[in-house]
Image (cartoon, rainbow, N blue to C red; front, side, top):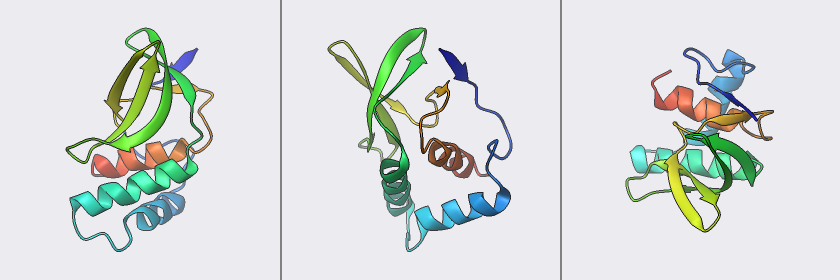
Length: 115
């Protein structure tokens, strides 16, 4: 399984207008960081097809769900056998082909890193 590396700049395949629309949709009516995180989480959960498989540190894992941790970071809950590990979505390697809705992860990463 091939894994995509994060690139700097606007996410590939997402126009500036689409990116602006996604950011607006995720953060509308959010007045602080916790509310913005919840907005992004909602959009990712509604649009990302889970479960999907990817590779983390050379091990194949299944991304079971997307959630928030206690610090309001969006994490992918990765499962391998009986082990579960939340991994920040900004650090999660995406497989090729990407799962449906993965553009929401890319848009969040771009926004999170200050565009």
